[in-house]
Image (tube, rainbow, N blue to C red; front, side):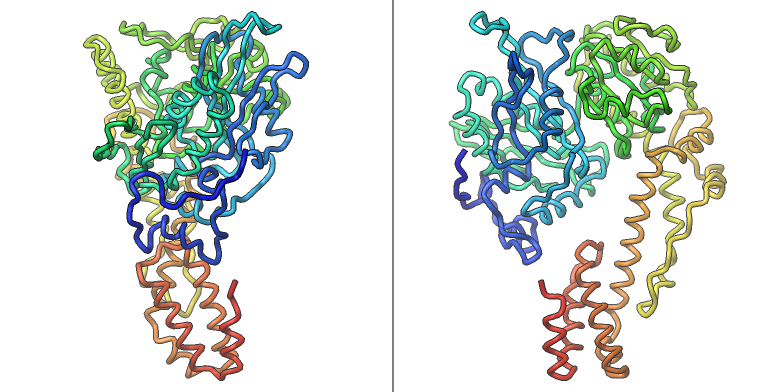
Length: 590
């Protein structure tokens, strides 16, 4: 596939770029970023596109890779090959779409990684890229073909990306894959060229993304959006020849559809996910397994699920032995599987969800009791939740009744999902608000910040001290649910999700302290200070200020702070002897 010169402009619409916007930064390509290269715009959205076919001698193999210079290790290629085909027992005739997630086996940086990091900073925590993992978005086709030795045409088109935009890539694949199977490589090359003209994935901006005759309109959420809200995209005038699709979300799955097989246990599942418990989803096909795993991970939003999760996992996965060993306790991970072999291999796992075909029948689901693990013998066991776990909280009968009523009244599935998502959101927020309130109290007072001393340290997290705050300021202030909230918190504080959440909050608060310290420093008369001190002390100050200037790019400082700091540095250097001026001006330049 030939590399072509980059087109001018920024996708459809040709919006004017503000001087401080990420797009302007993209075009300026400042000193610390390398200039844009061909395929950089493509790389902002996708790592590569693979076509995986079935060879009678080799088995699954990568037949096509775009762009051709995209790098995948042999281990990554093997994982993609096995994960992009359903297990033979799934019997997926026709077209099937699903998603998988696999470990990146080598670190690599894009030519404009610094700009993508800037976009990542503006995302909600649960949409940030994980540097250790890729997503694979699959469109698999299996149809009878008597001209082939095997009697079947079997092929997958796979989009490999760092971005967890499940719904968006599902729509993109649904548009390009069927035509690719008819028109082959020239069509795929044209589709990749379209993607390489897309604007950057900037959070908070309405993006127009042309792809093979249609324009997909999306808005990526930002960390400043109110949780649980979706901004309505304004519909601009489109040329009569242009088909436009507006997506209400880039990442959300159909929660109600996914949870319908385990309808009465949604709150218990929320607890298991919150606590990072080992969970297996046993499903008849990769579509059902991947959708259910992704629904489970999203049910604790806006809290991020910090453990590993595999929407579709096979016996060929490079982590198969690590995750199925009986020599140690099952790891904190959610696995989606379809192979009957796993019913035996993972029967020692403490929590197993067995689902049948996900269909919204329009009938009110019958209440099914939680089943004992010893009753799970094979993958043919009845659908249900197999666990000995006793939930900490009483079940929310109100939400169950509301959803049951929706089924009886034939309320649209989208509306049911919104009700369910809001219920999960309120539950998660009621749980996390007391933790947020306590952690905020660990922040030193602003008056304790002195420009001439190091920034003060955060107070340590004290579990018993936190527990005492729950008596007057616990979840009972915002949630109607009764139960053992204290027990739930004690369990959560030992979980990977608490560890990940607290490390993130501590980093954010430390950066806030550093930002306040930097602002205090900029409000001082640093030139006057330097005139009262020796040249050695002044040079030391300049070098420290230059370090702060470099680090300040990542700090939440007030507008104008970095410019003020640069003026301080310039004025101090100009007051020094010429020989020192020359040295200090060169020092710190890239």
